Image 1 (cartoon, rainbow, N blue to C red):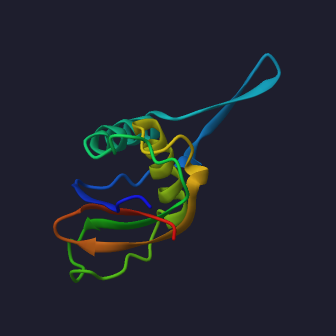
Image 2 (cartoon, rainbow, N blue to C red):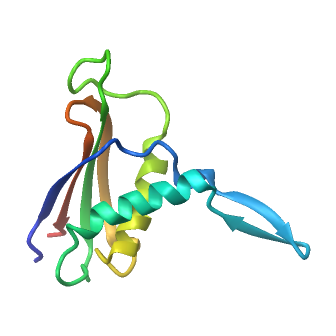
Length: 133
């Protein structure tokens, strides 16, 4: 079984998500593309993730745990964030970036997911990946 991978990326997490893709019609066919804000979020996440990628891509089923820690402002430390963006959209963008950074060949290997959004200081993203028993 794989050794767990655990790390914290200090940053202000992006709030634009995978769901914000745009579409345009070219020669009568829809073409999907990332608007500039989503492209910037992808680049930011991929650059931070690249520093933590495993030596070899994960090749077996795994579990992914993510805590999204947003700058807390007037909120209490650790208070749950119940505003947009939605966790499922955040997770989709993150997993796509983890694939691009070389964590695994395909995010279909993630068989179990847990996570949440919180107001916290310092802001950032905590990630833990574990092999399946």
